[in-house]
Length: 488
Image (cartoon, rainbow, N blue to C red; front, side, top):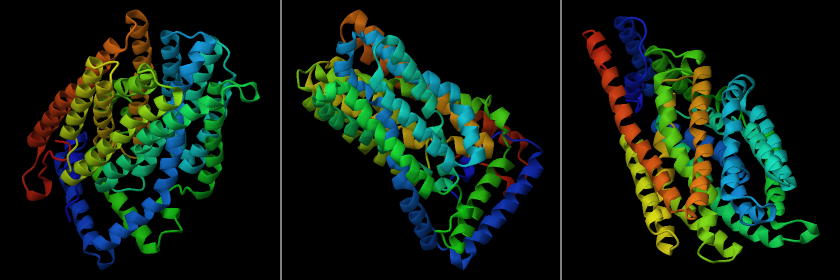
């Protein structure tokens, strides 16, 4: 049976040892996989039912948890509609505070994910949710710049490791052929969270004056509670690994574990990457730069879109409704790109096209700043930004396994999310200097386009180098013939 990610893993992964030994490993692996495929118990319908059962058990809780995380991370964008005025914050100071979250996030992300790999996802994810929920609620106590910057930084520290931990966790449950679709399902939480936060926060802001609290303080208090409550649900329902999943049958556990082990062996046969080496691997650094430029564009939108829409002259509640529109439309990009990327077993061009669409949308939003046409262009941008995620996140697991995968994914997300600091910071600085969001949006468009360019050239050069190595080392014989596919 042909496994979709087989060729890609080999073409991307570094090769150690002799080519002949590598060919022998791959031949043995293919024989094992063929025997597994011929087992009458593991027919395609059985496999489909197993994946569906896993998805219904794990994904609803994971998606809801990520939705809550994203709301608590980004609700400052709506609180700012009145908080900035009440506390006298400039766009520059607000952008600095919105982005400083990602400095704390980046500093603690790798160690957090390494701990998760060792102690298990269930306990560590629950710990993360409790601490970020408490700190998010404490944001209501902000009284000035120092407390604002400090609590935003600590919120990043508290949430560090949550998203890369989820990505790593999913890679221990889903074979590679399903990962883009699963990740696209996870990322649905992002536009849904932004849409929900827009509507809810707009309504909560109308609670201004109740019990002597400002509306923005109610936003932080009420939206922090679900994180703490969900942590106890995670402790109760999340299962650390397939081998201890009593809700799967013995045959289902056997098939899933053998399938995942076969993939791990295939990746490691092409050259095992250790934890320390993963932190300096050029493929990890390349993916980090692609994600960094994309995240600048993404969070530049997230933290300033409510203020851009507010400029159309509507109330806080209507502003919330209008702000939700681009995020709802962004779901289209997630679903279409994730499905297409898995169906075609292709990552590179899906990522390039999605990033280019995001750049075009942001440039259009800049051109039509202050009009409803700008809102339409922003919707195009969200389609591209969210569409870039499903083909991107399956890439690390093509050449990383175990602790190296946990560290590598965390490093990619850590460096990438530094863009969440620079994006709002620079847009706020430009806004204060020009008194308009137009040039800030052009800056975000250039970052999205840079992501497309880096993807195109870096992955092409990498694949060419790896294919050249394969051609020069490849011994004769059918069992060892390698091709560059999958991420082409």
